[in-house]
Length: 231
Ligand code: HEC
Image (tube, rainbow, N blue to C red):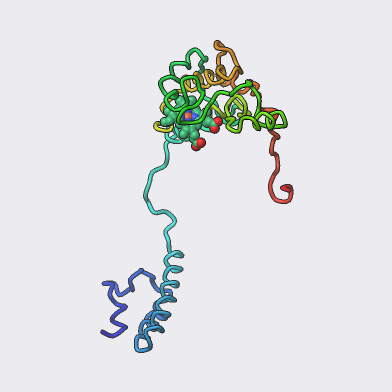
């Protein structure tokens, strides 16, 4: 088989990879170099593939005609992030009292009956309540208690992002199963267990961003824009 026949395997006379007109001539000549050394052929073959890839890329259609535009409902189902300032909180509401049952059913197995922790992280601050895991007082305490946990009560700077996290990620075996009301309620329960709000306080899109988190003051807003402003 001559090398020239070798490149004419496609019924339309074009080479495999469908490179079209671009490097065809050079390519054929390259393969025709089969009368040279094996190494030389491999080298030229490699160059040919590189050229073909470039040619195929250049010829890629603008659209492939697959997929379908996402519907507003599909986008809404994914667009669920909640910002620290409460932007994105959905309609709905709940109190700690409402949330106790949700917590017992959906969360307690991993986080403990009262949020004290179990197979997964504790969610309720250890004694002394409200002590944030920062600063000299904490370091002193931690010296005696190297196992001090980071919890909603002593570490999270925003109640809104607890909502965001729970709604997106918990329970990890079936994230997304909680309704907005159930999420408000279970977050209210966690806030109440941490002594931050009362059992009857109604959590909703207006009240949740106003909850004063004990650790909030320990965080500095990071308003750096990148580039030279980052030191
Ligand atoms: C199957 C076990 C499991 C269940 C059930 C579960 N969680 Fe979790 N949870 C985890 C694990 C594991 C993590 C740590 C995830 C990580 O760090 O990536 C976590 C982390 C969290 C955190 C973040 C803790 C922190 O301070 O970093 C919160 C808040 C939380 N879960 C709330 C809930 C709530 C509310 C429910 C019930 C609706 C729930 N979880 C149900 C396993 C579970």
